[in-house]
Image (cartoon, rainbow over all chains, first blue to last red; front, side):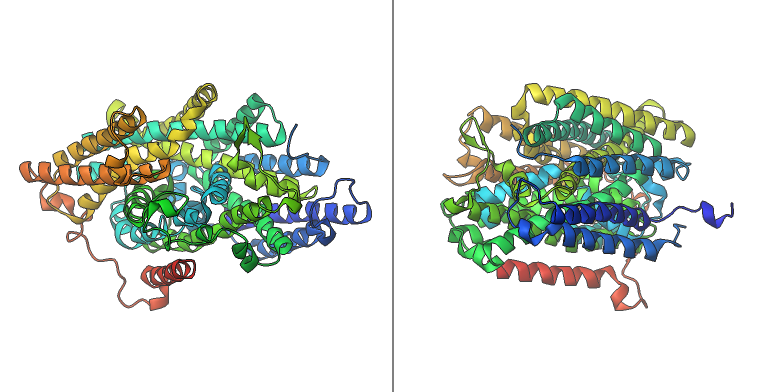
Length: 74
Length: 553
């Protein structure tokens, strides 16, 4: 293992992973409920907030992950 | 019956959060090799990392729930806590106070008191801070279990022990570094998990203008009804807001409370440390777009019988803290519910981690090393920090069970801050800016200031005196009384410190170099570009602050 690999990853990298994973899960659940509507309908359910909010988290998380993938904390 | 039902996907999101923060603790442990790493996160954080952690240490779930509920109750006046009650103090810390804190290389706020004054002032403040922090940590733990029990039906014991154990694991492993990492995760979780409530609420009602159109006029203003306390829901005058909240409580908390200031100490250099509260101020001004907007949306919906929206009732009393959870239950489908609950959990746990990481530092340096074991090595102090973390968590759990059997303790949370922080701000202000303030002046000022604050609280509580003597008004709320008590405690500490200083011996100037204005080199960088100076961003922040106050006047 090289010296570079031992350096600490920045917080943005970990936040990126967290947003990406949550975004994927929320987006996927939104898609699922789009085709299999829940018996319990929330207000504004017709806007399918899980789909666009989950997608936004996924994109933001992905950008943070890509931008910080090579960064380390000195 | 519970308000919010969780599905598999919600539980999965919550479980991932727990796994994530514990993994972060283990990941960071290999970078936590010295006491400096454990207590000050290695002093290598950028201003962005330190700034977001600085803000997040204060942005607890209890505050989010409480402030949303308070907005339902008092209207826009609650925004004072985020604007006049925070921004001037944060900018003052960054521009004027941080050079003394950071340049002296102290590890804690009581550590500064030791250098500027003497050991007894440091120990007095260290003990007061440690007791306050553990009390607040325990009460927060109880509050978290109460919220989770009320809205999700979770068992008290499971909630308290699961969250406390998780916090204990990651803070014990990697100290302030893991606390800061989880605070920043919490920041993103809160914005992504809760801001959507405001977005969907505005979509349902029509527009933000429509929200303001449908609330009582006095609920949509900041200052225009502050001349007469009886004209606003908070029953407080502009003087109470400006002197009590805007000056003493705000400056006392943001400039001297080690819980938040510790985040700035973790910055990699003086400029980053000064930028920490300045950057945080921009995000602080944005928090009302979650809590205030959500509170006003809840108010509009509750006043509209066709909406079918109502807050929970506890024994015939409206539970104002239920405003945010009820909006989450109204708008969030499965998946998003898990995210919203995780955001609240993250807020509680990061708040507790913040308290514990501040406690273990003050205990280790300002009480243990200062009084019990003066010759402790760095390795021993690192070990003691870990022991203090576990002990602090256990004491918090005991306090939480005590609070459960004595729920009215919750009412004293705000009062506790005014007992410790309000007088301390007078001591700090005089200590940093007046060179002839003496160690005995500071010590006795603090003692009398704290004592007077507690005495005023008890005197009103047990009807020994009329509250109007303190609030200068025939009508007032508990919140107004807090503001005014903080002001008097500050003034008493300020006056006693000056009087005793005039009668006692001051420290020689050479011992005060770097600690007091006039004996410290000016920090405003010469030759650096104006856009890289903290002062430039502080002015920008101040402009936004003024615009917000005028717009919502």
